[in-house]
Length: 88
Image 1 (cartoon, helix red, strand yellow):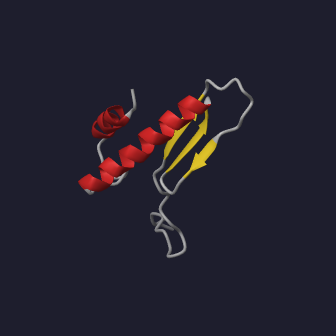
Image 2 (image 1 turned 90 degrees about the vertical axis):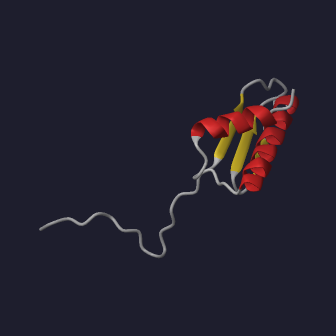
């Protein structure tokens, strides 16, 4: 019997692409989590968590202006957008 390639049915959805930011510099015992439709930020000091959140929000604003999604943007272009949107 020949096996056919898996074809998703109507109830199956393609996994959505997300950005995940992980901060490792917290020392105050707080558990920080920020979730949105297209990203999640976990951990980090208050400052780091805030910077990561700001970076990701601005990154998605840039992608939206360009009419691109995470699935469409090239890795190099995404890296450049993230770098450009990282607060100093």
